[in-house]
Length: 269
Image 1: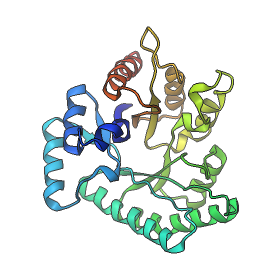
Image 2: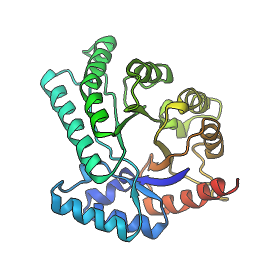
Image 3: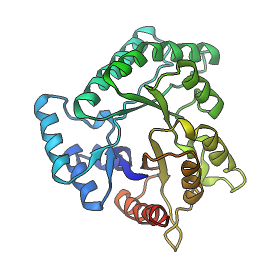
């Protein structure tokens, strides 16, 4: 497995213009990360000039792009907005192809109080019907994250992937998302983090790892990372573990600590 980091981890720095995408590449190289996962919102441009600058910066450090991550909502109640969301994801599959990135992390969507759950799920399936063929054409895999308020269980995600049966549709597990407010839960209450991951890990092509707090020995306190890695290994997962923070903390400090801990676990075998 390889270790990466989402630009979401440094969301405060991006928002304050203390960091940009090119600087994020440099920081990742400095910290010793294998790759980065930029949110598409953090691209200042997709012009040939900027893409060229990004390629050169990646080459110099060296760091790879593990995935690109749009923030689509395929359950939006406005059909015109859903069409725009599909068009946006399709556009990013082409940008990913041009950058040599094989994975586009995607969402299902968010359930609104005025929308029936089954209706929202139908919209999500209809949107993926539109975008999966383009992903196939561009040789980019859409990796669905268990994020948001719709289709976030292992059963629902498995049905989605199996329905399409396409190599262009897979999963991006974020295990701690299976338990809302996981950091405030007991160990027993956190058990679905591991059982749900075990049910979907065979479909994983990219993965998130939430970090945020550590004990005196440098172990993350919000999740049993060693147990997660064991699950991934049992399912022959060999992709990226991409760091995200789940709370407002010193992002650089968290990444440094998490990188040291996870690297030691991966190097142990």
